[in-house]
Length: 320
Image (cartoon, rainbow, N blue to C red; front, side):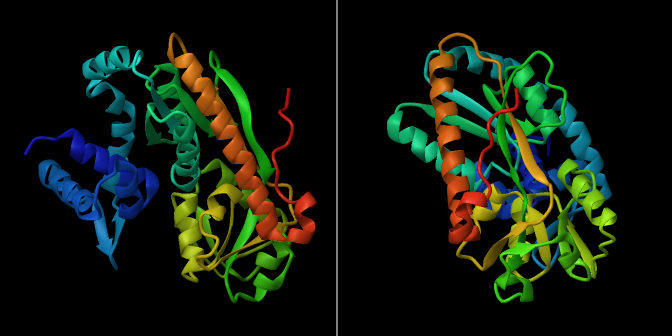
């Protein structure tokens, strides 16, 4: 069997988002279809790319190494068709968005619903990417709008601050900390922690914060995405620190959000390279992004503590 785009799409989505469920949602297909594509890719490559543990797919070292190659070459696999599609869609009201996995599910779904209510004839595609890939895709005009981390090289791109709000602590309902209004880093000592992967810049800042406070977790579980982190907290795997926009998706599912008494901002950047007829549509979508961001952060403020809403996470004025 030859390698096909369907198999590579499924592989990239599972590796980026961390679960078959999230990959199926983004690819607009079923979980069995994603699992089948992964098995076909393993057959085609002769590699075991995932270990199946208790119904979850755990990437093998071969999968992680292959993913690096996929990231470097993915855009060029069907470049000719992609360029033709770009030229064709330039006149048909199509927008392409690349964003961090933290935004690629609940937040972007809410934004698109808002946007399509006013622009019912528009079409969109959303691709979850790591920050470096968001920058690359924006520069090469594979996406019209990107959202990435703040600590990256964005030379040559039109950039604007997108979020600048405090990260929060998340615990399962019924946890001893769940009744608190504010959690200090020291309160996490001896707790089982769910954290992002060690290479994630937000994880690295949290590591430095906890080390400075002398905090040692009872155990550590790592996951590649903030949505998977929240899902694990809901299931009682541990407690965590995460951006509030992703955490909002899990309100009502057993996740309790608490303010974190630490300077740990969730800062992201909006990127853009636009030309031609896409500009007006892109501007309208950017307005929808910003309005949804503000609404979501207002909802976070209310969920944290209605009495403290004025002091809760909100968008700060852009840094000039």
